[in-house]
Length: 215
Ligand SMILES: Cc1cc2nc3c(=O)[nH]c(=O)nc-3n(C[C@H](O)[C@H](O)[C@H](O)COP(=O)(O)O)c2cc1C
Image (tube, rainbow, N blue to C red):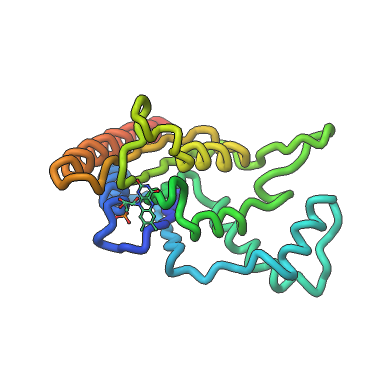
């Protein structure tokens, strides 16, 4: 069993998002020490370009043409990133809310890996279909404000909706979000929200652990 942890906070040990994500991981690993965890720290990563030759390759693949042989070396970097993604059975995405959505590095990563013929294809009517099946995803987010259902800021949450949209598009529909909020209003509120989210993350890890013990 392989878990890919996609990290989209640059704040290391000070990251609230990672504090919760690490609690999830520790809880899961306590019950499944054999779990292989691969971390893709996006702020430390040298992501392949999504322009030039790779852009040309993407457009060729979209219309069913082979890529230019002269562009294969550059495309191999995209393929390596996709291979790492597809090897995982479980995804853990750790992302703070930035300007109501995801940090730019996570969008860059998505732009690099969501490629035709690899993560999605087209059916006989030309409708896109996801190619990533049988995987689970947990998205852990923290937000400075409160975007919970029923709050005045709820409509501004373009983060959870986007994560569900793009990963659902490629076929990952078993996706659960734990959103810790508000983080930046008052220290007391933050502590309570962190505690609630950490508890929810540990409970979810227990559910995952039980599901994989049975499987
Ligand atoms: C560039 C940037 C943009 C942010 N935009 C928002 C935002 O739109 N809404 C919000 O509630 N908080 C916003 N925040 C606050 C973070 O979401 C919040 O502090 C979060 O807990 C940081 O997570 P981390 O500790 O894991 O890095 C922003 C923070 C940064 C650095």
